[in-house]
Image 1 (cartoon, rainbow, N blue to C red):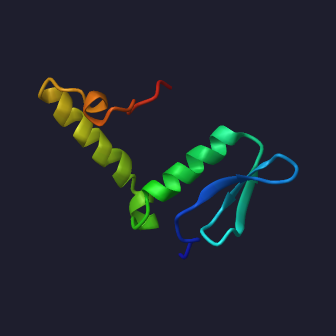
Image 2 (image 1 turned 180 degrees about the vertical axis):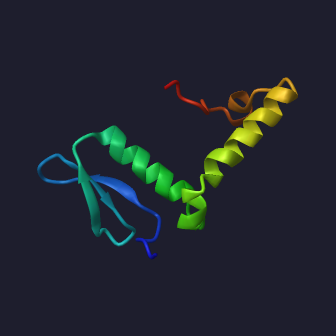
Length: 90
């Protein structure tokens, strides 16, 4: 399966909707919520090069979980190491 290549970015259209556009400016999607558009773009750009099959198998989630567990086992904080909050509360 082919997908629109990265990088993607968020842009605002004339009706103040959030657009997700590719590197050539082609609109891929329109959303009302800016936070949703930003999250979609962040996810797509962060997964550049990872196959869709691997994403569907949840390799990113599993990999981050293993890294999280490693830091916890060693009395360290992944969030502190990276300087960003890693997990959101459900």
